Image 1 (tube, one colour):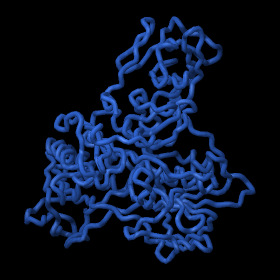
Image 2 (cartoon, helix red, strand yellow; image 1 turned 30 degrees about the horizontal axis):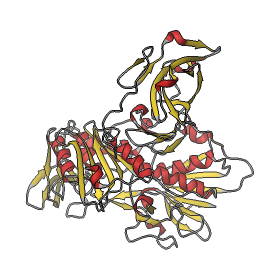
Image 3 (cartoon, one colour; image 1 turned 90 degrees about the vertical axis):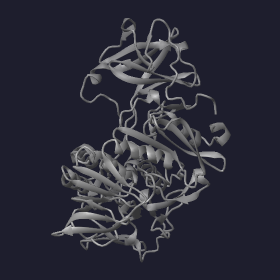
Image 4 (tube, helix red, strand yellow; image 1 turned 60 degrees about the vertical axis):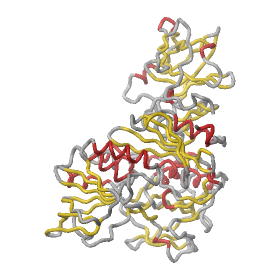
Length: 559
């Protein structure tokens, strides 16, 4: 590992005196070198050929569009400059060969084709024509599109739709990112059969990671895909439907309403459910969990101007506490450990996160638990802690862990482990032919931990699983080989995480945790196995690329 590998800013390559190079590596082309091409296309000189060496990238602007210019193996390519997930500037990301990784959430794109190769996000990048003449690099963009409300920051991969005469059905149980990604991957690979997504939710697939960060958001703003998109590509979504059993011999799924659906291939992506409180008073009203949009809006409505008590210092619980900190009359958080995130991120980062929320008047009751909940007229009034303290409460939000949703498979031959997770192989296949599983509900072989089985509830992994399942349904044998990438947001500050740090024995810190600008490298068996950061981009994405390419970083190098 070289000295500057984890610096928080990309060094800007030196540009020629004829082109203005900003500190953020954004280059505005000299309009005197604009070349009209006819029609709506415009071609501009964006830099000199010598401005970029192999393995370097620059952000340029042509026709008011941010474009990422990359040089690799002597060839130039140009793709959209903003990540299709949350519009992060890719120039601040990490370039490895012909792949750029987003600095915020780890999505990866091929810099030649623009195709998305790692998640999160659904869409690919637009591509732009590049030519080199007389030592100058030209990029062509469409000026008409750039001024429209639909500037091409995203590109949907070409997808087929259902074809008449194809008598084949893929049934996807669960309405999350794994099912949607599986459906889209099938259509991207010219699958012409019937695709059905069955979900208990009231809505089609949503960006559920938003629900704990913006609890009063309008539901239409977090649709992963609008209804007309799904209809166009022949993806049926059955909402408010629940599968209660599966006969894998007859290939029939039975629904709660008594109806049944035959399938040829099945994906189980039912996710997890929140673990319920087990104490006297747990049946009272206004005790809530956060699992869907209805839950989020209900918690928001009950909390505004009232006293909120959050049980559990999970990522969800902490995000909810942060969100409600300036909306509820008071926010109290009860946790079993000394600090939040103690097992996952460690006590140092946990203490920092706790201090952030305390500055917003969130009260913590740590190394504690709930003895009972008291109410009046069946509504919550008090939370009694194990140490005898009593907290006033109008609403209680419970975030004490999750359980994989696999109960409906009991009695079937699908293998389930002791923690209720469905066991799959590296092709996302269960032990039953034509039955696949993906997402939070599965225990899968994690390549970076020597194929040890793991159950990891990350949004990005669920998408990766869905894609792998689809490819293997189509007999395009592909193994799951992705690096876990996760993020949480507290009061506008993101903590990013990559790798698999279970069982880590030491943490090496760069930067300063107290100043909330740091990188934490998690050590196990004298090697870096995971990383977390705040305000230290693109460090975590760099670590993800190191792990993805199979390189090892020793503790001595990290130090």
